[in-house]
Length: 438
Ligand code: 5AD
Ligand code: SF4
Image (tube, rainbow, N blue to C red; front, side, top):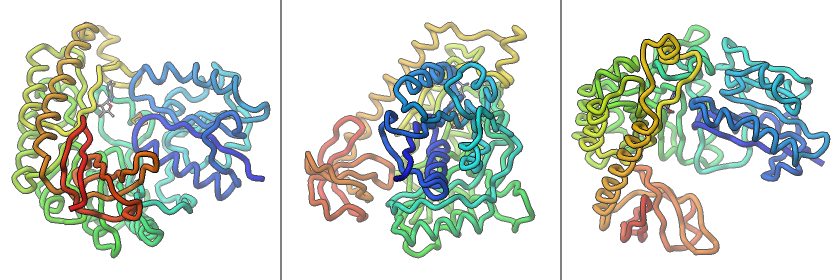
């Protein structure tokens, strides 16, 4: 009988992809089968995120919960960014943890599960050419890592410390994985990296010259592949060449994540983002002029040290001008090993008052909700191309994502699952669109 693996994945899409790699490695090399019940698992893994302080703090209580319910001989492993960040300390603070595996060391999973009380968190480890075991479950959507790590030095961000220097994965490996996905029935591929459009700047061994725009073009040549998405691009590297390819290549979905972080050029400078408010708006304008239906998502931090009301109003101004489709917004959280954290420790800057930061976050969220309601209402009568992903047996509707990444529900037959269909929108419920096959 196979052993059972339970895995909890927190954080970003990179972590989801890492978990998919971990699952495939353990299924193929160690005969594990997935379970969604920690009580029956032989191995419990928590794939952690450390980008903000709160989830990191919750880790130890979570480990305690698993330790209480697990089978007697079951092992607990902590993986991901908090594993990289805290390393050995996790073993010291919790007797229940059997091993700690950093975000840069995923390819060692089938070795570490046989070790006792070790932490492998080498941040210089390079598994950019490692070929992971293949997931044998065919799926409509596939995720492919195109780079590991991050070379940016945003002053709020812990990721360069947890995921190390940026290294691009060889293009041939990416193309091979994409073809394999398509051969097994995948229609949509999501390319992943901390900074996808910095692709090609550094490989771990000699490689032909290639940038992100060229990579997109090469992947789109694969017969049978219908859709390409990617996350996250950096607004600084959105050059004209990239925008043209993005606009004219019919396989590239017309939804883009553009992490703004702040609308104030002053704050952007302090964050070391490398662009100004004007540059960001100019890139949006250029894309919208070529792709009017473009959907844009963003990440925003409020309450970065020294952020004034005027700075925050600049952020609201960008929200008004761009009318983002999705906004992930956060209150600044001071993270160790970051430049802004040292400024705070040295009293060079101060944290924005918590109540003020909360009030700004609410103002941002409330205004965004209004914008979304107004813009979604305009979708009624429009036709969207939807990849139908699932069928809800109980309520008898199909569900999928539009080219612009909107969730769409359709009352129709199960047999459409897996197809790309034109759907006319008839109704809007919150962020969800409801429609009929056109
Ligand atoms: N505090 C708050 N939010 C942060 N993010 C990254 N670091 C921090 C931090 N220290 C947000 C950014 C990033 C997203 C993944 O998390 O907006 O784009
Ligand atoms: Fe992803 Fe960053 Fe969280 Fe790591 S710290 S899981 S890279 S969001």
